[in-house]
Length: 316
Image (cartoon, rainbow, N blue to C red; front, top):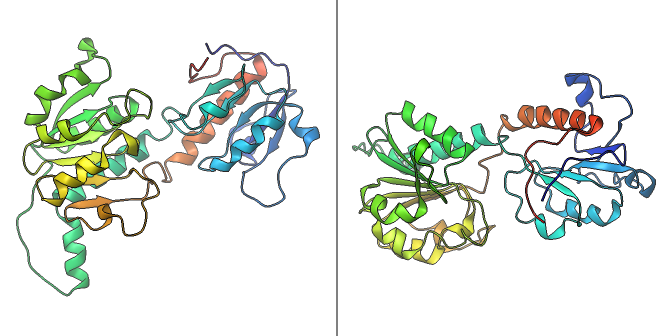
């Protein structure tokens, strides 16, 4: 179980400098240090690391976890990612973990919408035609009136739904567990929902219950021409099963996450008609930094005053 953070060390290690200049002074008694995880020879000395109680990890720097064994008084880790499955095995016992819930909602939802619109309106074909000096207009699919099923309806799914509704799509919500009062179906309901789905969007975390969740059976249940979108985690979607459906042009796909990742050069997904791939960039927009800064400042103030930190992840 996660628990409130007690101030046994006053040091805070942040990934960015000068946050106090933009967001106001730090609370009294807090010792703020900075490490971005990538600048050569910038890693703090052990005298600094000995006093760190709260570490806000650098974003998208997987190698930063090497610092964990050198933080003897660490009480809490703040990840700026929503998914923390790769961090969990490295977390020392007794250290609280907090994720970046909400930081990527706007950016990821925008990217999902962009993938959907690009696929529905044949933007990859128009780009290819532009480069080939072709002018061959034709009618395309639309997002308006499309039946979209969001699998993994959390904060990102809700942000995407708002954008889809603005585009006049019809949205069905699905999560691991049903929430009837919110109109959310259970994953167990997918066999009845998928045959009536034009676009399915996976926004699933990676865990023991979601790896391979969307496989051959689920794909086969989709109608001809349906679009499969994945902005969650690559391993939740069976790549071989997807290739079998897209290679024969029965289904289409728009993927920001894939399995394997990074996608190797020459992988069939790169060259299958009707498949659009982006390199896991859904959270990487200008919308991220200001939201992350506000969360960091709030967490530092909570840490300094002994209040529970936001977005705890149960891991014991």
